[in-house]
Amino acid sequence: MAKFARQVEWIGTRVLTPASILIVIAGVIMTLDRWDFEQLWIIIGIAGFLYSFINGAFYLGPVSGKTGKLMEERGAEDSQVQTNLRRLFTLSRIELVILIVVVWAMTMKPTL
Image (cartoon, rainbow, N blue to C red; front, top):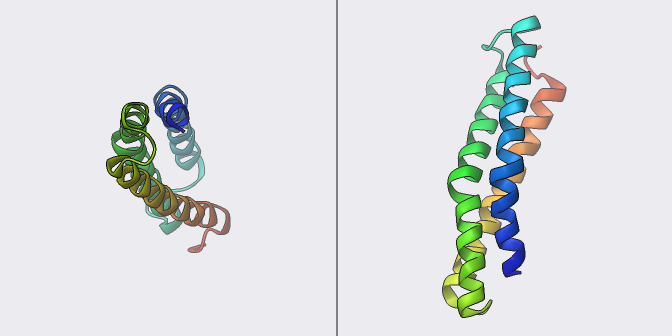
């Protein structure tokens, strides 16, 4: 589990962050071509991206790395490790719900 937590940090900073930036650039280009940024479904998408990016870059990634190191030092049953894991899993679930809402908004385009 400790190795997995460290890998999450590595993948987040080296794969997910650059991929997220490329997706936003592609989304902006596609929006400029056909839509405007005042559409509700586009606003939902941008808000979801911002939450996901900030949450991943500034909390999930760093805390995953720290939790992996704590697990190696103290073991998986340590109270701080367990607290970090509960927070990580809770925020990951919240992010999953937000991303599902974003996908729904992008596919259903509720204001059209």
